[in-house]
Length: 140
Image (cartoon, rainbow, N blue to C red; front, side):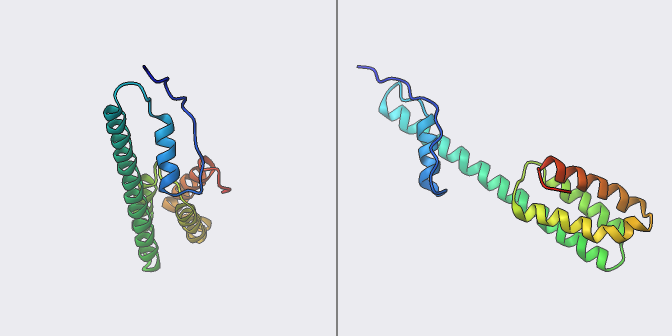
């Protein structure tokens, strides 16, 4: 007797691993042997864990670069700070967190005085951070 295919549904929980397992289980087809189904679910969990680890690594790299840029700016090295922050924005691609949004807003705050003085690197970076915040749905 064959079992019907599972509907692709999203199961929302309180946010822990159990809800992630429920989402993956709900989206995993149940056709075939039970062993294949378990293997498929296990592989889906491994892929989800790899994606989460990559996102966390990207966030750490972006935040580290942001802090480095703040240190460079406090030493008066505006061009180097802007270059470091450009790299931080590159590392933020695909990473979403409240910490990242705060870091970008902090960059804009620190750049404001240099942008007002007409520093070209600061003006270019300010425009890029403003666009990044708009794309992320945060107010610039």
